[in-house]
Length: 199
Image (cartoon, rainbow, N blue to C red; front, side, top):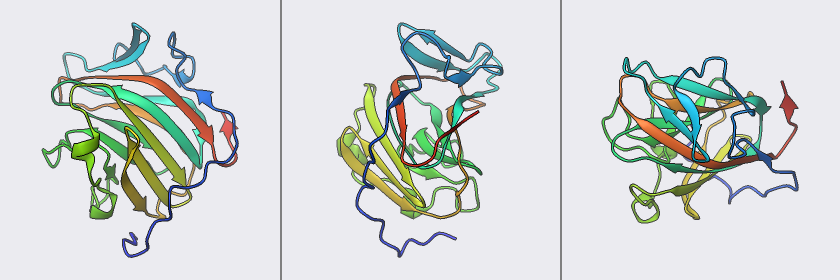
C-alpha cells in the first residue's frame, strides 16, 4: 500500500562506505553479460545499450546485490527512449525517458509495474528546470528502507515512500522492447548504506 500522506524524510544521511564502481570505463566486469548479446557494449569509455533490429529489448544486471544504497550515474540519449534503473525484489524502476504505456516522458519517476504504475507520489517535481535534453545528465538515487530520493543535476526532484519493495536485488539497466533506441551510461558508482552481499 502506498502512503502518500506520510512525509518522506530529508535526503537520507550517507553513511561512510566505500564507493564501488559499476563501470570502470573499459569493460562490463561488474555486470552479468550472459544475456547481454549485442544489446550492451562499451564504446569510447561509455556503456551503450542499443536495441536490435527485432526490437526485442534487453536487461543488464549487476553481479552484486544491494539493499539500502546510494547510486550515482550519468545518462545520455537523444530522441525517444524507454529505459531505467531497476532495483530490489520485486523490481522497482527509476524511469528514464518516455513511458511506453503513458506515451509521455516520465524521467525521474518511479514505475511500480502494478495497477498504479506511476503513482503520483513517485513523480518528479521541478524536473523541467533541472534536466537538460540531449545532454549528459547526472542522477543520484538514494534508497533507504521504504524511502527513495532522486536528484537530477544536483536538484532534488522526487521523494517517494513505499514499503512494498523490501528485498535487496541487483541493479539493472534497461533497453525497452518495441522501440528503436540507444541509451548511454557513464560514471556508474554505488555504495552500500547497509549490508552488501556479493553473489
